[in-house]
Amino acid sequence: MGKRGDPREAPLRRLLSRHNPRTTMTCDRVPKVCRAKGSPGRDCCRKRCVNLRTDTQNCGCCGKRKCVNILSSRANCGACHRRCRKGSYCRFGMCGYA
Picture 1: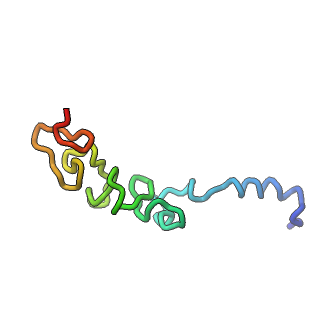
Picture 2 (picture 1 turned 60 degrees about the horizontal axis):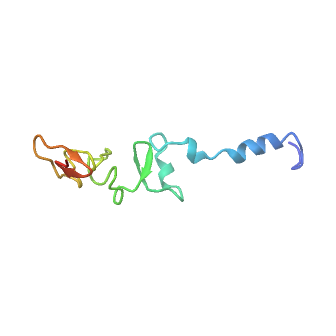
Picture 3 (picture 1 turned 180 degrees about the vertical axis):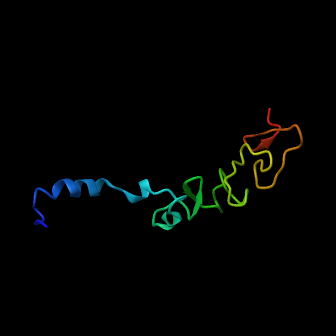
């Protein structure tokens, strides 16, 4: 192995400095990536780290570890387990929005 100033090591150092392991690892393959410092949440939801207790846009407590969008889900409209009536659709988290 060469010294620190060895020109043969420069390309490798440049490549390694550009490599960010969190960008190539998705939590569906490596769940521990969500526990890393700076992660937006500890739970994996559709290949994204989220906080299930605070992320109302996708997961919340809806869906039993399955992502749900409460803005358009008929079974979870606006909040978990809030169902729209038959024939009514969920838009913007409201049943029957016109």
